[in-house]
Image (tube, rainbow, N blue to C red; front, side, top):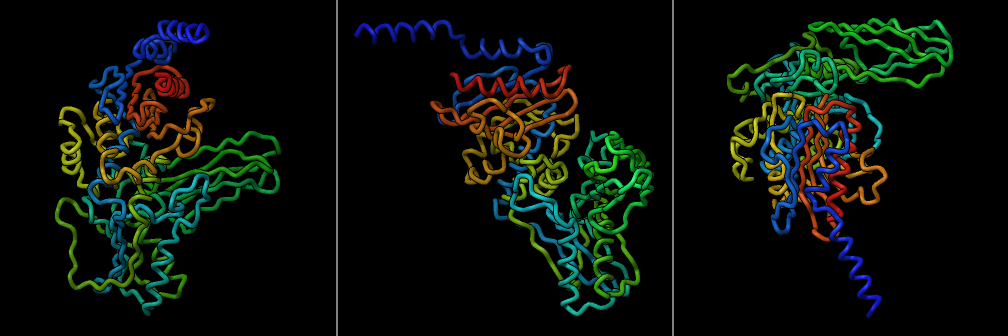
Length: 469
């Protein structure tokens, strides 16, 4: 009995010394210069009871960065369900062939379902399959052109708030209802066998879209790789110069294309010609500028491709934080009108969010920690909980959390979506608490002055601290 009493006294003494959760969280925030003067908000909800365990600036505005993808993928999943599939068709329209985009973001070399560290395949494999189907139908001649048709959505390739040069790179590839290879060309650069030789280049998909000027020179072994890339805005010219050493590992540049529908149409032209089909008119494009989608009741469907199910598509969006795919989720889901319907069902008012894009690349998008936790709670209580959870990165394991929460034994209890821009860091998702069950949380840090790694480390500490309470 004396021993039991002593243990009880020690436990009570420890409990008295242990700071309350708000005090402990504030100590973490203030202990790091990167967050002490930053704008930081957080909200944590115990799901089974609905009790708010902790909050700090829960209704203040924050730039969420890629936390925005939670909203876009939630919209698509709740509106269409996990089994929804996108459709791409090739139709005969008079003398032309029309490659009709149905919003499918999976026409690429990406592996489905998601696999960590999976190799990237042929970026035009889906186009090759469509070409095979057309030849099997007996196609031998296209008297007109192959038209890339992206009229499913109004032609508005750059969401508000994206930077002028974002569209040159993979992360800012223009948005279109007809996409190929994430609307990018993957350019691989390898050294020559001897110093002074030009570097070797390969492109995926393997056809000429950009005019590439290669001035990269192979350097002596041990020389640091220095490659400069320039693509003048409004052109299809790519200028490369610099050095890469003999024996150095290959490097890769991901170059966004300027006209996605034309890019896809050109890929189909090339694929047909390799199969002996004569295409007299080349590649063209058809956009929509506000009017209804282009109907063609007399058009004959010659070939079509169905995407993997939506559950696998949103897994890629959230695991790797794919911007273009997130924009498609928003547009396919009805844009702002679709978002309003989602918010109404989740108990979010118009004053809680200001979303101008679907990916979070725009700094004009604003949300608050409270609205993010409401989205998380709404999806947890929906029929789509399991595919939703499978879409989120797991701490220290995969996706954008693969290198997060290192050193924390319970890192795998975290399933959450990251967000990162200059001076912006965010994390929102779920924490499997050993005593309280599942927690929904949102942490956002804006206007920090320091490295993003330090800001992320503070967020990780805040989330892990919850396990002690």
